[in-house]
Image 1 (cartoon, rainbow, N blue to C red):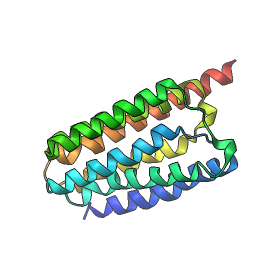
Image 2: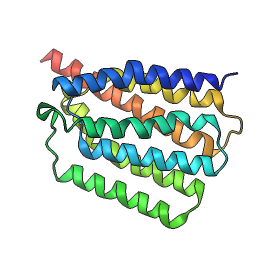
Image 3: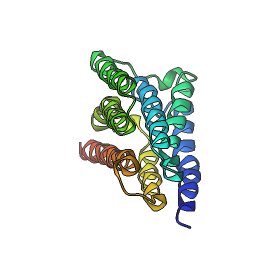
Length: 194
């Protein structure tokens, strides 16, 4: 019964999280970091595949969702030149380490190790956006990350076997979204005080 909450979470995530984010990209309000969004698409897709290989069922849907929709954001971010975020050396360095973690996954071929490397990869990918959100909160649409906390939490309702394969990536995604919301909120609070 609770596994249907996963589908509800995905619909809510798309409707109230990603659609506003995409609209803000097209308006030039949101400026996604290309390294983050490309790597955010790859790591969850790999994490999803690894989780399915290890027998995880519908609980993997939010993680899959967290791979496919960032790919769409990455592609759409090329449409509006006002949405461009200038990449710096740090961004490329994070992208490199993120890609290296994915290569290590390919070498291991073990589902649990793959999930660990997918989390490491995603964390490196998140760093540029986390820092950007802290310094320039006006370049992000916070509602996406707020909704993503809920979407990722729905994974836990569908878990039948509680182990690292089933909770690892959803737990990480919940935590990173809490950090992103905190960074944006903190940045906006400080900017409003100035």
